[in-house]
Length: 189
Image (cartoon, rainbow, N blue to C red; front, side):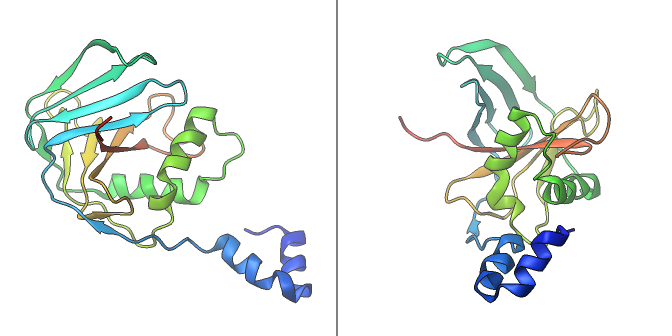
């Protein structure tokens, strides 16, 4: 809900009307088509310069690891050899819509603010739907870690979205049920 002073300024100062309208309208981003194949290496860099890396050799086999700020891999990573397609993406859709509505949360951590900023082009999309999603570890922890590669994204490079279950409570600001992390295809140095 817009604040009262914001509404008054928009109503009585015609010069501000265009600026007021654009403040709450999603930005228009072109959507780029992408292959439904998960094969590839995808990265997300945190403010600490650590990176989350997802390498998929097929639609059912992926490895998730982290690198230190110096670029060295920390640990072996976790192998997921039996990823399976998600049939019901309603929880994912709910998490996305919640993030859209709560992206300006003042109480968000710096890491969450960084993630929301990275997600901004996606959060600006109206009626965006997630499809082509896989559950990385369905036998042990169903829908704990889910990766989606939709048919199109607002980025001009292959992108997947990692939905990671929030452990400390189900809802917060700006995420609920899942934190959503955009991982982009590795680019050449």
